[in-house]
Length: 104
Image 1: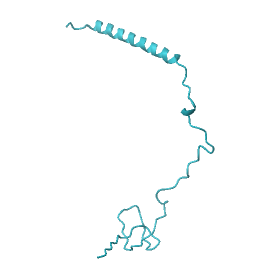
Image 2 (image 1 turned 180 degrees about the horizontal axis):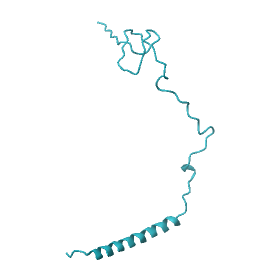
Image 3 (image 1 turned 90 degrees about the vertical axis):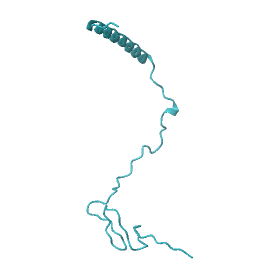
Image 4 (image 1 turned 90 degrees about the horizontal axis):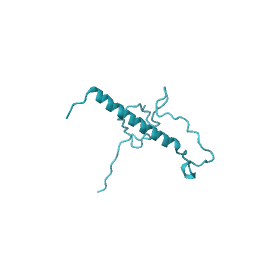
């Protein structure tokens, strides 16, 4: 197989560029000749009264600065630290220990 000279490579690339430009022209004319898409009644969202609805107001996930959640029964202050345990079984915060009773 004979090695291509730089002139032959350039000619081959120019021919490929011309072919690609021709294809781009064909595709552009084909795209421009198509009519715009027409959407039927199922392709769009129906208009409903009261829509769009206003979003709910922002509700902070964590307490506001200066406010610390505390237990109403024992007064323990709950910070973002995990691992709290309450000795009360009726803890309103859900931190009470688990009690198991068995009947024999």
